[in-house]
Each structure stands twice: as structure tokens, then as C-alpha cells.
Length: 93
Image 1 (cartoon, rainbow, N blue to C red):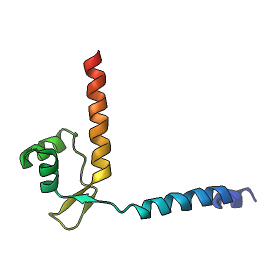
Image 2 (image 1 turned 90 degrees about the vertical axis):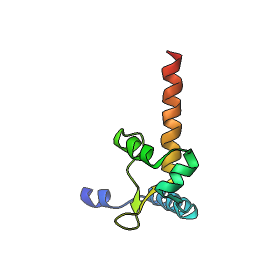
Image 3 (image 1 turned 120 degrees about the horizontal axis):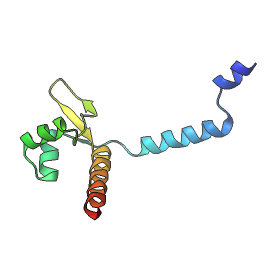
């Protein structure tokens, strides 16, 4: 009987998961190409590759084709915010 309890969600968990999923679906993902990133952040194409190698630009979240990488706008914004916060803490030391 214990195994069955672990496989089923309780009602509150199911409602929370459903609410979270509805929120995700109501905010469609905005994808950026490498060129979009260059324009938005005023950096060169080669800089995007360097930032990727250094781990400062995440790997693409999605590929629409072999040579069509796309980045999630929200993911990039979080990374940039975290990097800026880290820089503030480093400069205060």
C-alpha cells in the first residue's frame, strides 16, 4: 500500500503543478538568435563565441535546425543579472 501512496500526487500538489503549468503556458518563450544577442547587448559575433567558451553565455536552449541556435530571453536575463550582482559583491571587497 505504501508504494501506491508514493506514485500518486495529493490534491494540493496536483493543483500547484497545474497552476505552475498554466503560468508557463501563458508566458510564451521568446527566443533570441546569435545576431539578436549581438544587437541587444552591443557585442560582436566573435564575442558571443568567446563568452560561450568562458561559460559566461549559456549554451543555446533550443535549436531550430543544425545551425540555428536560440537562447531563451528569460534565461539570458537571469544570467546577466546574476553576473552583475556577482560583480557588485566583488567590487565591495
